[in-house]
Amino acid sequence: MKTKRIVTLLVCFAMILGLFAGCGAKDSGSETHEVEKIVYATWTINTLPSNEAIQSVEDEINKISREKIGVEIDLQIYPVMEYSNKVAMDMQAGSQVDVFCAVQNFQAILSQEMCADITDLLEENCPDVMKLIPEDWWECTKKDGRIYTIPVWMPTALGLNVAWREDIAKELNLDMDSVKSVEDLTAIFEIVHEAHPEMYCLVGGNAGFGGWTGMTYAIAGVDAMGDNPLMPAGVLMPGSDKVVNLFETEEYAKQMALVHEWYEKGYIMKDLATTTFTNIEILAGGNAFCNITGQGSAPESVAANASAQTGVPLNSKLIGNSMISTNLPVNQSWCVASTSKHPQAALKFINLTYCNAEIANLLQWGIEGRDYVVNADGTVQPPEGFDASSVPYPGGYINMGNAYTGLEYTAAGTTKESVAWGVAQNTAADRSVSFGFVFDSSKVVNQYAAVNNVIMQYYSALDCGSADPDTEIPKFVQALKDAGIDDIIAEKQAQYDAWRAAR
Image 1 (cartoon, rainbow, N blue to C red):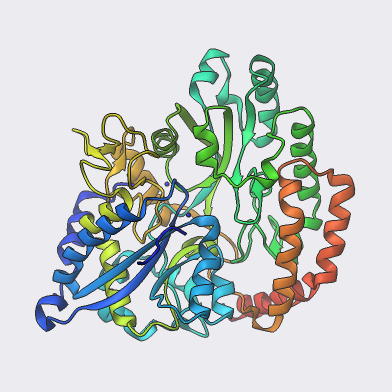
Image 2 (image 1 turned 60 degrees about the horizontal axis):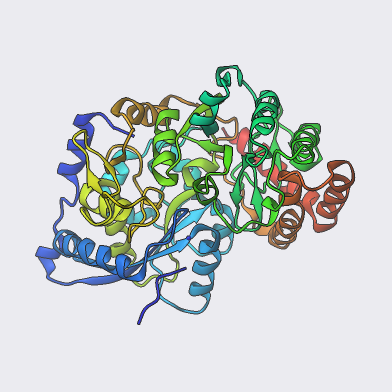
């Protein structure tokens, strides 16, 4: 018995029709009558679906994929905080993994040779993907000119999003329009805390190695140069071409001082640094006011989807401008495992997830009638008597190749205009100065591992405000130096200078 429990729009109508018509143009299943079986591993930040629900969705997907491309999948869904380790361990153990997602760790899995070179297989097996992804995005997927991953097609130009309880804002007559920066939240939190001392003004969730509030991520203009933005080893600060240690900058010290002040005033939940809950789960508890995240979708869509998933009335807004950096097209990108014996079948199914609405809706929402109902406006919501976490297959936050762009149904409250806005940002938003630069970390693999361990040791307590930055940041910086972060920065600077010169 296999175990499957291991954790934000509308493209113009003509484009959707074009994609759907071209999808699966080569009917491999009917041509060869041969069925290849692959393992498709993805993740969720929502409540994990039951094994039975996953199996039923898998069965429905296979009815379609068998006919269209001659491929069946073993659908595996894991909690996001466990996902990367689970996939890596399965591959190391020799278990079958064919399709997996790079969760903010593409450079790491590339250096570990976990993903196959798919350059010569893309045109034949992923024609719809090739039409959909902007040409400059492919530069973010390469090593030595070869392609190793497929960018996710979703609203990717991230901006800093602040979401809040709209009912509390109305009750207290809060002026959320006055919030132009995270610093402006201090006055808001003071009012909320006085009126509702039982409520956490700011919450976050589990980042896979501990809790986070989003306050490190909220430092404006940081270019992570392809690294995981939560734990970057060498960044570019605004207006500079010098690679530096983010955690040694004045900007970081200032931000951590602010979040520590909030913590000391009781605005942040005391055990956030060690929480095992996601931000969605914490918000659903009804005792939280505000959440800070990076979002590519329009604020209305973020609020609608989060409200649907949490059952509490939320509103949201963007602070500052959206931007696309190298890590964004690949931080949820799709890879064929280097150990896969079915790379072409894997790519054919990946292609199907980018262009087939039935597949997209099954992956994202589950079974119609059981897990969701379709409203008159084409949006979806849980059936009567259920909420987004109590249906057998809780959807809305399950990762797949083409998401929140109008291919699949959108959550109730989402408008077609907000969907179109998010998609348009993929081409209209500014690119970071290092966009397309992919760092080869092979010369500093050991240093990366040591630095990541140090970041995991210090990050959460500082980002959640429970650690005093005056005493802990110096220790953090020294530990990073001892782990070899200066070696990484020097190597990244050299490669970046060479990349700039070649351009």
